[in-house]
Image (cartoon, rainbow, N blue to C red; front, side, top):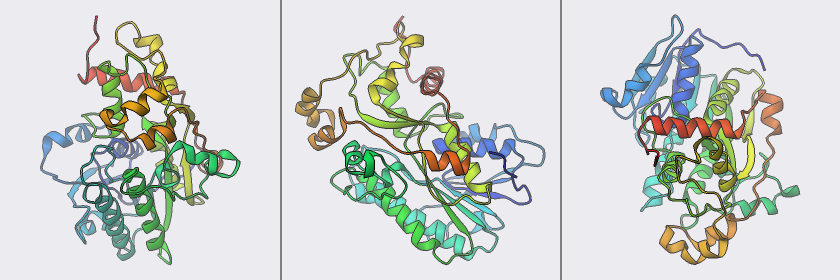
Length: 353
């Protein structure tokens, strides 16, 4: 879908060193848009090297600003003069000791601080929130409770807790807070709800859970079998395009599911076989659910998670994003193979032969 990109002023991208943010920044610079990018330490040249190396169209600049998700007023300088705010900053990990401190607080307070600052910044016309399908569901089993057995934007996650899937809880609370703060504001809020985001990074080593999963795959941890874990998959490059559409399409609004493929973990990993199956110890069969259930505590999982997600189909309706944002999606095999090759090139793992 065609849309006009406003190059008259800067835009803000929070969490600039993140997996999704990197691709958003790359696309904006390619389009000639000046980007204000918030990071924890703008003086950390090594951590920002891959962003500074990005190509940019004539007139586009990349400016870094220090900001703390938990700091009230921390985004004021970076947001000044910006017409669009892309709020991507939020932790994505399943290995936490204190979910309240490590997930809930940065997601909720960060969103509150960014939206409150947007309310104080007259230049802001649009805020694009990187939410998640996790704000719609907790477990694949929730699909069965949805109307028609399929997730839609009308559904809100009502099953996550600090004890079960706290990441999903963090995304749900953060998005709900954003909609609350957008009521009566002078800007429009558009939320994007992507499923599991895969694909290559623009550089460096992202801390996204997606890379943790694929690193285990490349090192052979799933050689004896991978679970048929019901998931949706989408390419990070397609997610970045969704952000630009949400920012610059005049009629973009509401929540938008960004999901390319209703699949499961094993079927996604099987797309690696044609290109990498001989050189790496990749999974070729399903890990039995009963065995995963028995071993769950030793694997860092809960038996509730196994029961509600393994061998359970995942389905979501991506029609709104296709119709209203013009979203299109690349094949799953391209996404998975491009990501795997990127990780080989970055030295995450090596071929066995």
